[in-house]
Image 1 (spheres, each protein chain N blue to C red):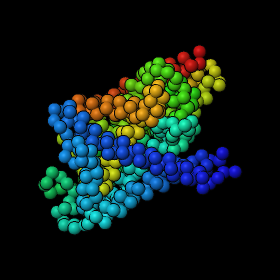
Image 2 (cartoon, each protein chain N blue to C red; image 1 turned 120 degrees about the vertical axis):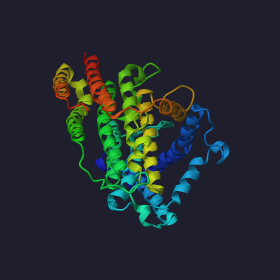
Image 3 (cartoon, each protein chain N blue to C red; image 1 turned 30 degrees about the vertical axis):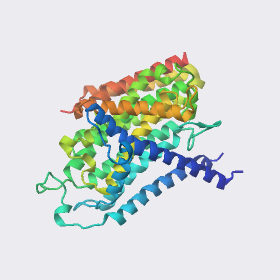
Length: 326
Length: 120
């Protein structure tokens, strides 16, 4: 017999924990970190006036965006234009359901350890493209349309290598549950970053492309397309696009931690701390890349996915299958 | 455990996520205000008057990419259950999937040779 009220309360508490975690760790500190790292790499200071060391900068930006006017361009498809940012934000936050971010006693802190966790994550990651494409189409703006189209072709192209990397890890671990995958990695050299190194590299590249970050930020290439698919968005809807993007980026980093770096596991320190350390290592890597490399051309981008990563992923799946079977 | 209990936390998470985003949009509608003027509602084209509509026809290569994607995405849909179960079926399962992946690899080579992956 299932105790419904208890189940619901437990789910609400865990989700609330995830949101607090997201708000403090990802949104507030993450956006600031991005700008601080950018400043540091470019020999400037970054934000520093709002709050101690600029810590409240993101809060100030959110309050500013809340007060901005909502503009619907003439001839925009209103219903789609208004809901597109919602899709992106919701998809970006939904992928956090399956990410285990630590342990409390002998319970794993995860909203739900689904037995198809990895598939769920891939599904939510690919849902973003619907919102982005819808936003680009509905704006009735040529830059937005081009951004939306580029983004659609880029994200569906890189979804395949991403799925190949996920499949290779699932084969090695023998399960699709994220908690199960973490538990299949024992010790430093048991982590899949070593045993599944090619999958790790494919995952990192595909994840960078999937969240539209430099060097794969063609959908929002500001020097050619103004801001790409969100050119016409203002105020909170613009903020929701950003929220979805950052939520997705941190989810990708968290997933890389879970699948390849052994998740919350580590000596001495509590699990949550280890998880955060590893996740920020990946996040820092993504930021480092962003402020270092120039942007790809569209044909180079698609070549990399279809002619390099996809065949490599297929071959690696066969190699992993051979190793596990024989 | 039924499917509903398995997915109840996902549902709760979804409701809360939608609630928060809608609340943010509601606050924005209250605080933002709307004072539309005709120039403000023009699509942004670097400050000049927009030419024509943005609802144009789309280059064929985007469709080609989309079709290729669907083929390989269906393949991954088959690979996911296999990835979990293939240990139990031993060599047979590995061989079967090697043939399947090989055929799709041949398909990729064919598409490549026919120029489906060329962008110029």
